[in-house]
Length: 196
Image (cartoon, rainbow, N blue to C red):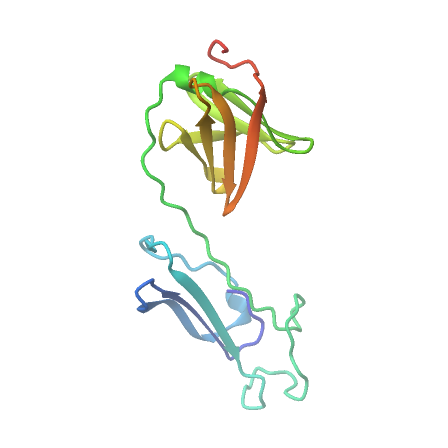
């Protein structure tokens, strides 16, 4: 939590898909000096569809003895003389166990996939592991969920390889948080485990 006025309150609440809710943290009298992280003793598993609500209140009245000037309106802003309420939360996405994929199958996915005008995804197979690189971004590992579906941890994205009639890979679908990019396979590239 990041807020500047003493005499403020902040609450993190989760609302589960069934409508029930649970308060994760409640700080009824927050101090600006407490800009710190609050870490749960045990990670909290939130099912798909759970909403997270952060609520903050502050007392801008003369009753708040820490208020330097109750006659001035306080609006949102990043400087400390403004109200800088921000609710941060770290999270991880639970993924299924990694599938065991034959390295020859991984080799068959290696290639260049055109995902947009002038933008390609390069897929390489290296010593039994699959990697992808889009444009100038860093190369990331594609973690197998099934023989054709791979998860990118760094991007919280999924790559699915599509096979044409005859079994050769024709395209890769890159799902980035609900936005899907279609990448037509246009050119093979060398792999680290023998090539195609």
